[in-house]
Image: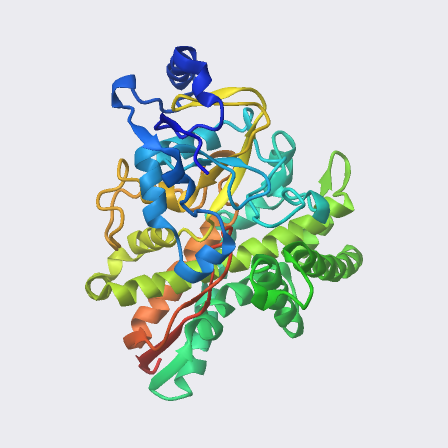
Length: 460
C-alpha cells in the first residue's frame, strides 16, 4: 500500500521527482498567493503507509466514531496537503490547515467550485452532475454573485430582524410541548427540539404551509443522510436516494412556483419565482435548485449545531455553569458552538491551472478537499483547540466558510442558535445524556440522528 517516503506535504505518486524546482516553486507560489510553504529546514520525512491508513473520508467511520480529529491533527503536523486515493473512486488532495483553507477560499478565480462540490465516497457520479442540480454551491463568478444577490437581502441582519419574535415563539412552543410531559423529561432532543426549530423557521420563511412541513423534513433527511443505510430504501444506493428526494422536492416547489407567479406573497418562494436573471426568469433547474439548497442547508446545519452544542455543554458542565452565570457570553458561545461542532465537514475546489501549496505541486483539474472541522482545531490559530470554551475570543472559525461562498444563511443560523440556547438556558434546570448519541453515516454533513436526554424543565 505504501508509496515510499516523502516530504511532509504528503505528495502523490511521482511528486518527489520534481525535486528542488518544486520546492522553490512552492515558496514563490506561497509568496504570490499567500499560501503557506514551510522553510525547507522544517520539513520532516513521514511514512506514506501510516498516513494512507488514516480514515478521514469513509461515511461508515463518521457514523461509528464521529469526526476523525486525531487523524486530522496528524495530517496538520505531518502532511497538511495530502493525496488521498483510498476509500474513494476519485482521488483528491486533503487540505487540513486553517491558513490554506482561508487562502484557497479567497481565490474563486483560481479555485473553482463547479466541477466537484465535495467528496462523496461510493458515489459513482462525480459531485452532483448526474442529479441535474445547479445552485450557489456549485456556481462560480460571475454567475454565483448574480444568483446570490437575488436572495441575500432576506438574510442580512436587517432582513431577519422581523423574524426574531416568531423564532422565540417557536422555541417556547417546543419547550412547552416537552414540559407537558412533566417537569422531569426523557426525550430525543433531535426529534423534540433541534430538528424542529430550524425546519419550522425555514418553512415560514419559504411560505410552505404547515401541513407540508413533514415533507420537507423527510426530504432533508433523505438528501443529507443519503449515504446512511437508515435513509435508503431497499436496493437503493446514495445516488438513488438523493435523486428520489430531489425529484419529489423539485415537483413540490415547481407547483408552488406556478401558484406564486399567479398570486405572489411576501415569502421567499415568491421572491425567487418572480425574480429575473439576465432579463428573464430564473431557468427551471437553477430556480428549483435554489429551493433545494435552501431546504437542505437551512435545516441540516443548524439542527446539528444545536444538537452538538447542547452535547458540548452537557460534556463540559463547567462551561454550562459559566454560561448560566454570564448570559452576556451567549454570542461568543454561539460562535464556539459553530467552531466546535463544524456541521459542514468538507467541500472541494478545483484549480484551473497548476498551483503549489506547501511545496506540493497540484495540477490543474485535480481536486482539493477543504476539511473545515480540521481548520477549526488548528493549533496555529486556536489556543487549546480541543477544549470547548463559551468565552473563546478571538474565534476566527471557518464554520460558515469564508470568501465568495460564505454561508448565505449565516445570520439566520446565528439567530436561531442564539434563540435556541437562550430558551434552553432559561428552562433547562438540569440535563444529562440518557443514552448513546446516534451519528449520521456521512463524511459531508456531521449529523446527529438521535440524542436521548434526561432533563428537568421549569415552567415558562
